[in-house]
Length: 346
Image 1: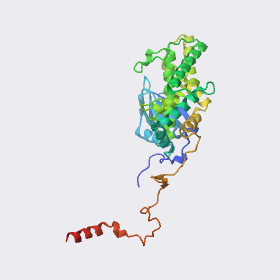
Image 2 (image 1 turned 180 degrees about the vertical axis):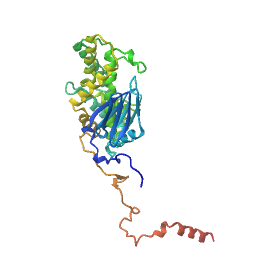
Image 3 (image 1 turned 90 degrees about the vertical axis):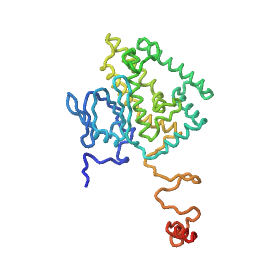
């Protein structure tokens, strides 16, 4: 009998749903291994055990060393990992989907590939951003894009004035994180957390992060779409607030500053129940309802009926009512066919 090390792979039904999990945990300069169903983190301060099934995203900073067994546990638990390095996202991986059914994925592909339906989802996204403050139902896509640009500039100016932080526009170099001013560094740090969370929720629901609607052509397109719905209530005000605190103390951004931004973003995400909101909003965008897509069955595709039951040995079409005694198995017997061919040759 094969040896089992640690906990066996859990059934999907036994794992906490994505909306019931913690948001994200950031780790750096440590060794990560596995102890049964917990992630074991070892650094200079000691050892910490983290229940894997209750994490949504694991953000790994510089100096992390993770074992194969830890990755196996993380994947089985449906946890996403973002390697963010010194200057932002370097690599992303996600565990198995927490929804075994592909209903949302199929619907997402249908909406993306149909121009009219694609545009309808884009409109819904913009309407979610604007809320009830403005009627945008009659605007073209180009007008919506321009109106959204104006709205975002107003948001940046509003928080710049509120916190007394100079703002000259969103300006950052992906290859030189330190070149940005404090508010831009805080925005980049906070947005990484938001993108990772959106990507984790999308993956957990069985959707594709690459099939976006407003953003297209990138493996994170849909994650950007979803994350953008919440920036004005999360990362933007937090970035200006944190930059103002740094400005007041007369300090320059450091690794501690980035850590404070992440913790502030995490607290905000918990306060507004963003995980639950993301799950509900994604289902609303794709299904136009907050439907329960958990524990659905596997079907066989049928061009006439849509789907038919799985796990059944089907008969030849039109002969469904024949019994085994009446069915001519010789018709499909290879030896019988070979014998007939031999007789014909003679």
